[in-house]
Image (cartoon, rainbow, N blue to C red; front, side):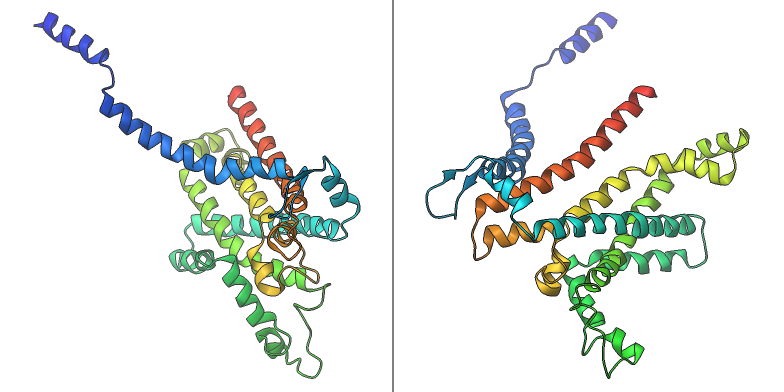
Length: 300
């Protein structure tokens, strides 16, 4: 009996995929890979190639080498203000909105009263797109009919919150942070729930304080949220485009890419060069994070 079962086990272990199994695997694995190549990597590689050309989308493609990049960094006045705004966006979300979302997640995780209500209320802006958040920002910060000026009673000489280049970037950042805080709160809250309680108990037994336990045991498991903050800040587009098409103090690199590729200029090669710069910056943060994670895995 054992001999027969052994033969059956050996046959099962050496069973090969049938043609139908291969077809199913090819469809389930091949289609996502093809879609990923067609939607993500195909356009990415095409942008890299087109960044070394001059093309208006209709005529012949002319190879210009690195001239587009030279013009971007030296002869394009909008580039450096847009780059500064992207860095400001990253700093504001990373130093204000993300820590505030973490604080809210910690408070809710501790089981404060009405935590379910707070969680639902704070998460509500996340279901809105950034374009809708931009329209809400217009309702709040509009010069003549905005809610903020009405509350302040500033009717004689109302402040132009969205028209003043020195103020509008901060108002839009507040609106973006309003949405980002709820998003980060949910991610941190999920991370806090996933932390093994035995790790906290072991830290407490070793004499670690509550703050030391959080920063040395809990917080390292929440680092992926930092990468999400970087991606959110660098891909920002919808909200500034909804406010004033990303002009007059709200310039961002993503807006410059759109204006050059699908705008009246139709400078696809030049716009692709800006897109490649934005891609390079994004990959720099992502690759740095992945390298640190791989090193951490080896140390463990």
